[in-house]
Image (cartoon, rainbow, N blue to C red; front, top):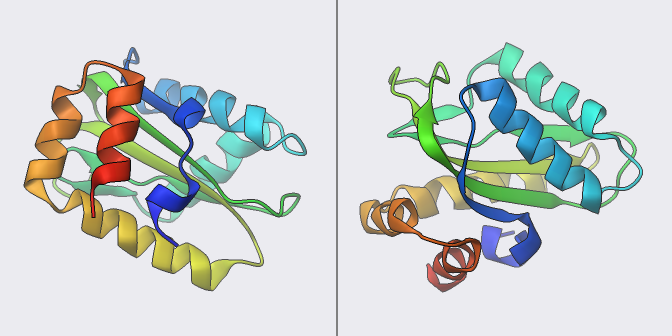
Length: 150
């Protein structure tokens, strides 16, 4: 599954204010909780934090792909946002992160989850796409860039 297939305009935010990893995660989880009604924002945050304890989801070059598995949901939800200013994230290259693609997936969807993560990593490995993402001025522009990327 590709990011373009699961991302929605209302889960795409450009230039989000946030001074820490946890504040960015709170924004992500509040947004996702509007879509995943059977799970609270707190439970979503807990799923992201539990995954981070296993190892960073900061893949380098200012990009993070935080993700969590959900036992109470059957739907996949993606949240894409850029931070107004890059935040410390403990990424593998120790650089701060300003591009976040969060995924919430049902526990039963492990194989689909891995292929989705791979497609997101591939999309964000394109430096030209990342440059466009970082230059975005609106939520719609950010969403359109993701949809148009191959």
